[in-house]
Image (cartoon, rainbow, N blue to C red):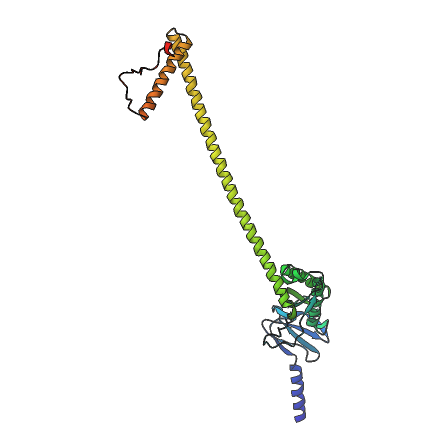
Length: 315
C-alpha cells in the first residue's frame, strides 16, 4: 500500500510539473514535443503537459535590452584600473586607428520570437558580430575626421539603418531600436597628437568666426555710411530743386508783373523793367544796411552826393 501511495504521489508530482506561471510583463512560449504552440501564453497560471513533453520560455517583449561593444582603453599614465575587455579597434579609410564604444538597444520581436529563441545557440553573439562587421565596413570607408568628430551623427544614422536591414535578413528575431557610437577616441599613444589637431582646428574655426564677424561689422558700417550719404545727397537735391523752383516762380511772377505794369501805364517793357529793378535794388540795400549800420564822417570842404540811384547822366 505504501508503494502505491508513493507511486501516486510521484505521478501527481510529475503531472504537476505541467503547471506554470507567466508574470504580468511577460508572455510564455510553449513547446509541445518540440513544436511551438500559438498563440503565446499570457500572464497568469497555466496547465500543460508535464516536463519534458512541454517546455515554457518566458519572454518580456517590452524590455529594451542593451548590448555594449568595446571598452575604451585607459591611459596608462593615470592610476585607473584597466578593463579586461578587448577595446573595439577599427581602421578608418585613411589608415588611422580609432577605439569605439558602441551601444545597441533592441527588443525581442514577438512576431519572430521563434527565430530569437531557437534559430541559433546565442542570438546575442550573432547580433554583436553583425554590429561589429557593419561598423567595420562603414568606418573603413570614412576618414578619421568624419568618424571622430565631424560626421558621428550621420555615421550613427547609417549604422542603425544597415543593422536593422541585416538583422531582418539574417532573421535574428529582434527589433533594433538604436545603434550609437557613444565614444570615438584615438589610442592612448596618439591622444596628444589628436588633441593638438583638435586645438588647431578650434583655433582655425575661431579665427574664421572672428574674421567673418569683423567683415560683417565693417560691411554693416559701410552700408550705413552709404545710406547716410545717399540720404544727405537726396535731401540736398530736394532742397536745391525746391530753391530753384521757388526762384523760377518768383522770376516768372516778376516778369508777369513787369508786363502788366507796362501795359497798364503805356510804357515800354524796358522802362517798366528798369523801374522794378531800381525798386528791388533799393529794397535790397535797405535790408543790407539795416543789418550793417555804420556812421559816415564827411569833410565839410569836400561835399559827397549820397543820393541813390544816380542820374542817367552820371552813370
